[in-house]
Length: 133
Image (cartoon, rainbow, N blue to C red):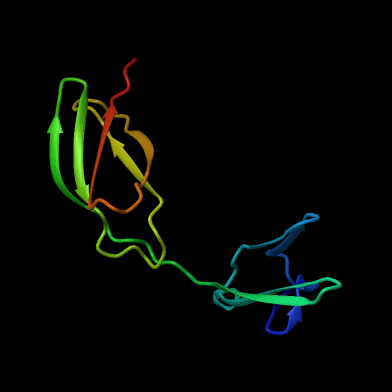
C-alpha cells in the first residue's frame, strides 16, 4: 500500500497518481501537477510474517548546466567531439546526452541521443555521421 502524508493512495481527488500492482511488486507513478506533489511517499508491505515500510523522496530536478566542449575534430564525413560533464547535474544523474548538428550549408539539424558512460571518465567522445539524401 502506498501513502502520502498518512493518506492511502490513490485518493479520489488525485488523477496524477497511478499504482500498478503485480503478485510480487507494487509500482507508484507520479506525474507532478504542482510543487505539493514533491516530497515523501511511503510504501508498506504486509503479509502473515509481518510488515515493512520504505520511504521514497520525489524531488524536483533542475536543468543541468551545459557540458563544456574541450575539443572538436572535424573529418570528411564525421566529427569527434570531446567534452567535460556538466558542472551541475540538476540534482539527478545525467543518463543521456542529446546532441544536435548540421552540415555547413544544410538547413536541417540532425538529432541523436547518446548514453552517458559509467561516470568514471570526465571526458566523453562520440562520433556522429551527418545524414545524406
